[in-house]
Image 1 (cartoon, rainbow, N blue to C red):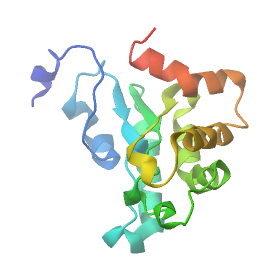
Image 2: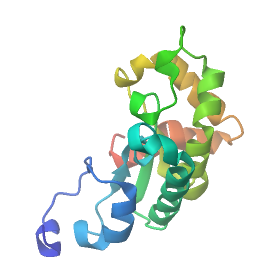
Image 3: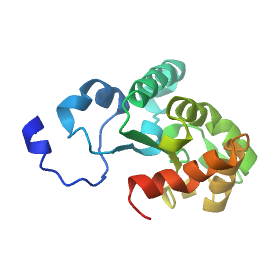
Image 4: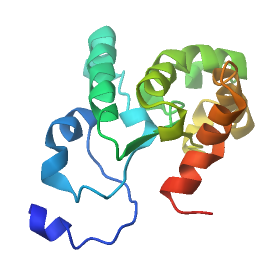
Length: 172
């Protein structure tokens, strides 16, 4: 797709199946500059298979990419999808699902990196249910998001739980 062909795209938001590292270095080549880009599931975290032995390196690389993407003003990030087995947390192997405290503790490094880089105005918590069902229930996941935003102001909570999504997806 050429830059000229992307200019005719409607000004809507959709999902892009690309890794944040790629998008951070190719943004101008991909889409029209006024088209919002939503990074889904915090950009995707893979910590199984070959990545199991590279967890620290992958976290560090992913964090650098998140910070690079945050420099692009039209990029926002969805915070969620961390209950998928591919994330390698291992909750699906427990005899009972984790509570929201354990989820929040496990997710904090990735979520906090995004919130610090993008700010609440460009973050939105997301449900990935029923895909995350193998690790936790939907209500438990939302309670974990509430715990993760415990130190945020009322304005920041409104942005990350509703405002960013309403603005980006033109819901209200």
